[in-house]
Length: 440
Image 1 (cartoon, helix red, strand yellow):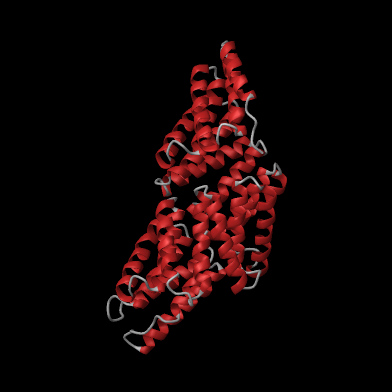
Image 2 (cartoon, helix red, strand yellow):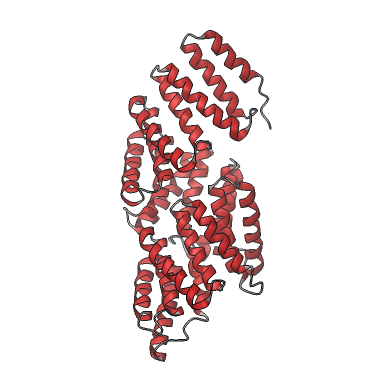
């Protein structure tokens, strides 16, 4: 979510244009950048890109060659490429902006913190969460050197760090930084503001990750209302919120209620970014899951194949994203008893996830479990047992031996052993499951 970077960029323009070759060129540069902010905030990303490119071209003529105006223009160009999902194009101008700001302004300048925050957003978008965390913590360290500076910028960076923690499953750490961000937003802005609504989205992600779907739904509905009132019903910043709201409603087993939100998100994303943009992927995944929940398997298969094609073309380095899409397509095949087609997809997904997340992650455990189900269905009982035992080992390591999922997996292992004719082993697994008293 890169919804509000432009609001930070506004602060940069206050003290920037001081060394241009002429006052006329300086005024032209300022006008281009203010127009960039206006278009960006309105969701006109194509127009904002044009302004950013013009601004870079103009600032390249200023003296000295490395100047604060050019650094700001490069930063803005990187931001708009980031917003458009053109991540490879975003990296170079943002890295140039960081280098230039450090050289011209010093390593601990607030404008350096702004570009570090944007690089953190880029790394998060590319699923490089360790790099994202590093950039964001550096940005926060700089901001804390200036206690009298704009606290909204600090809150914004805290919010992004909270999103990184959510994605890595560190919900307690995420909660702390997001509540701190929300407190700043509430103190420094109107309670209903786009800045505050972004933090509502992040808090909803925590609730969603903890399966508190009723709370997540309430937070997301508040966020949608705020954005619609302040930005209008067609603004791109609604896309992520509508998508997540649809996901939460699917988790609440309400596909009928989820459908209009997901379809609206896909429509807005395609209209804003184009049908082949990486920025459409998240909403398309939700659409595929909606079709699967509605048992529209042909439609779901078509969507997940489209997603995989887009990922292989645009984000081949995002192994986690591709693995999840492979798993989604495999689940569609499994739901239709097409187990021979599902198995190799799950196996590909498992390799990708173990390489990117390691072998002690809940998503890896789920893929082992899914492979166990597929092998059980096609009668490969030994292989099914091996897969379920792998899943069991990971869940016990992560969640403890009394977790409900541990008991459920032991009961599944008992069924596999029974179907394989190994009654004594089935009894063994059943007894282990019965000894578990799941923690509340």
